[in-house]
Length: 228
Image: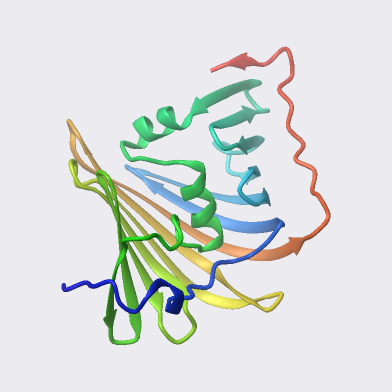
């Protein structure tokens, strides 16, 4: 695959979802090794700042609430009366793949994880642009529909380990004059001492609304809860 730096970045106006606050209700299905979890999730986002979520559904996720900040992930389990606090280093080690706030937010709203970057390489292929970005040991290929200039696929690869993350977006609809992907598929492939492992997540957004007025992010850890 031959890449170049043309067309110029100014010509590649990839449409990123613009919002101040966002509320989302979604159905999700998580497939891990020999385990499938289905749930309903309520999301609230303040752009580039905080992600709040509340899970309901099967016993394994019932009563779970979380808060994602720029540097940490907080989760409380109201059924078991316990809580957990993770740095993004912890999260990355758990999934054996580099994960940060920027990546999680972009996964939810369908934006390019890193946006346009100087030095990125571009290839025009059929009806799409492929934008390749290098960040040290991380390689990102962004697939953009050339007709609507919206992201339809992202492939993130850790060069040293070949661990990879694939994001697919479809079912685009109008959200206050902007295109928004109401369906998403996430596939994480990583390797450990047991071999190749796969985690897959299917997201079906039921309701999405943008907000200009500040949202509340109710989250507190009761004193009697035990840290897990």
